[in-house]
Image (tube, rainbow, N blue to C red):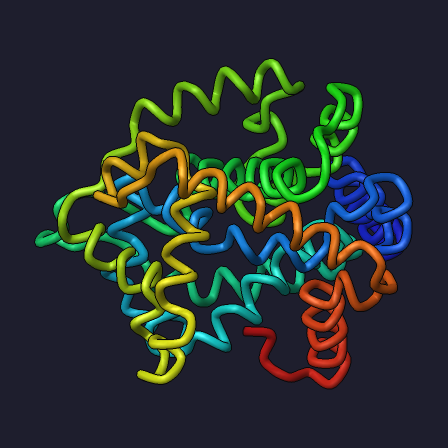
Length: 294
């Protein structure tokens, strides 16, 4: 096979794997506000949902990659997470491959040992599928709580664009449910397998209470972060996390997220999408200069 033919074959395989990405502007035009930075409000809850699957939970809690740990390098971890989301949703095929290679380098160190309570490996596509499903669910759930209810057709359209949340790594295209009904069946089945033991709960409470930050930040924002994190969780996970909730807290939570949405909407799109646009800009700068991506 000639070099030209090989390059064409590679390009063809990539185009078959991932849909043509929409730009931030196109995404906002099609799904107004779907990539607003208000999605960060549910970040803690989404982490809990991901790690509630025991193999994912222990994979993160026992991780030997300290440079990528939210407990040790919270700013870096935030940057790399939002870079992944931005590249998966808006990156070119070549950019997805570049970030996959970088993430694979970190993931090679994440696997269970003989002393681990559960078996796990960061390259396991089933575990990655659950994480990707949580990310998709988080986008839609947060948007609907902060902004408005999406129609079934709107949800279906966004869902068709979302499989790169998993397939940018090792999730195969055929693993991603073909439609929303298939995803709902997968989601409900996945919820049955969630279990948070004391070891993982203690790790997650550090995140919920922001105990990885300095004492002043903990004092100023810890209680609020626990409140907002609890609000975005399904009740069964609130119970497993031993987080108290009641009707009064629910009313306050709903009022807060609606106000947050109203405050965010008038801002220019680049400001609203800064949580994704800045990491994407930084990623492309690093890629161009040959600097480490994570």
